[in-house]
Each structure stands twice: as structure tokens, then as C-alpha cells.
Image (cartoon, rainbow, N blue to C red; front, side, top):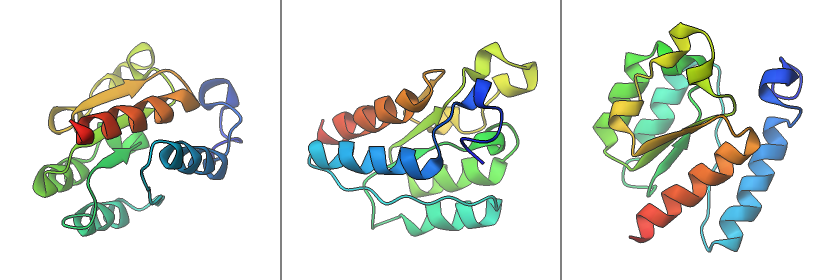
Length: 132
């Protein structure tokens, strides 16, 4: 729904545009990325678990699952892959229920409030971390 849902909060970029932008950035940094999106919590958990042994890290926007999903938190903790949590909006300046993240304690860090740039910053941070 990105680009359509509350553009004053989330902007006008579609997820396809964001993913394409990230692919270009990753290539320029000498990295490769795979993109996955689902509205299903179980599918997201499965994708995280399937990354074990195949991926070097995870860049994730857990959206509303940030504030509700112990399952996503446990999946990230189980695979022990460096994970960066990103959000388009500044979740800490919004409704109080958005201030808590189940993923933050098991992530390298959280980047929020910079719109599409949150993804770019998150990807750069993850790649920098992986390169040590």
C-alpha cells in the first residue's frame, strides 16, 4: 500500500520503487540484496528463518508487527544474523503504542523518521557493519 496509504506519513514512493533504489545502492556498494514482502506474519518468520546460512544480514521494516510480533523477534534472535530495523516514519513521535519495538533489542539498530532514506541509511549501516 506504500504510495497510497497515508502519503503524509509514509510518502509517495511505492515498495517497488524503494526496492529498486536499494538494489541500485547495493550494487554501487558491491553488495547484492533480495527483497521480500508479505502481509503474513508467518511468511515473514519463514523468510527470516530461511536466511540462516544463506544471507549475511537482514534489513527489515516490520511495519505494525514491530509493536506486536514476538514471533518476528524470536525468528531474528534465532538466526543471529545482523539485523537493522527501519521505518519510514518516526515511530517515536507518533502514537504511544508505536514507541515499543519487539525487534529493537535483537537488532543492531533502528533507523526511523527519514522516509525512503531510512532504508538507504539502514542498508549502508548493515553493509558497513558486515565489512567490519
